[in-house]
Image: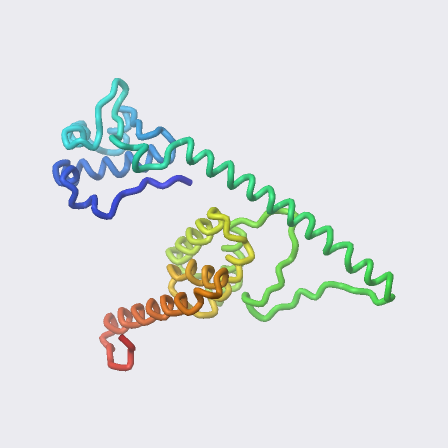
Length: 253
């Protein structure tokens, strides 16, 4: 899905300061709606009240230079410069569908091979075969072929099924987002899956998952990735210790 992007320096931008907090609340909600509906930054006038805002808020956004007034409502200034356009979003969606179709076709071939190969062996040596999908942990599950292309939700569900207890909703949401972003970027499903298993074993913060997956893809970056993960672990440890009032010299800087 598309995202409404806000620059990290926008909070103190002269236009933001001129508009004021009330008007900026309308600006953010309207931007989210325009992004979701691919309007190119066009906002119908009647949506102002729907967002619980006042006409004066829209007026302040126009005066600050963030919006311009149109015949039917308002238009974000510079939308195509800072936000994904409808053409870009639809192009990315088409590419994702084609990528999933190719993956689904590859899985079908994999299923065909998995079904016919054991039968051939059984005929040649007379020894019956059967699958033995035993496993001891999430990280050692043998992937079973499927006729349907796996999705981010598939991988998320697999991870949750192998957690000792249900993870917090905020953690599930962040992991789901990281998985989806990596798959949308074209990172192979099995590499993301292996990275998720490694991440779970290490018990790291959800934000380190992409670094783990990248480490698997580029062995030459392993040392640097490990350093980044280690630094993140030490930072989280210091924060936890500070909150508990137990910070001591044993925690490495």
